Image (tube, rainbow, N blue to C red):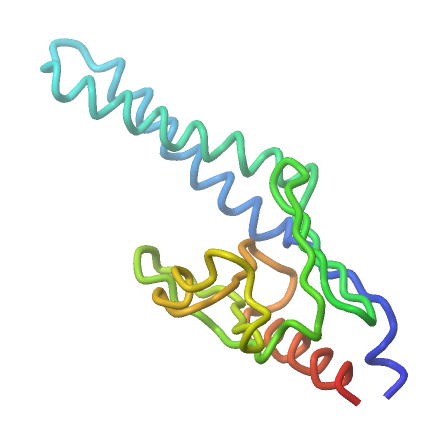
Length: 161
């Protein structure tokens, strides 16, 4: 399967990031309106500033990611994830046992996750394993989570041939 060994890059979805940015900006506007309302209690003002702070930070992060979307570089030897502020990590195919979809128990979020081959997991993977995934790839991608898992699993299987 020569197509499987060719390098490929998957990018973060600018369309999905734009939607997240717009939703965050909408909540920032709500926070501004809440903070500007006259005669409110201190607790209402604290809530308004909390909304402003949380969604304002989210808007900044999404705006940055629009300029520099996450990327996933697939090569014959493994994959490299590059995300927010250039943070990256590389995983070699030989260390991966299988890919799967992981449902984050805290957020309504489905991530690409994997389990390591026994004895190949990095330090700290046991904690992650107890949560359901030894490793995961964050981000919003130009393809569905299911399609990305299929692509990575196909690459993994091709690397073993």
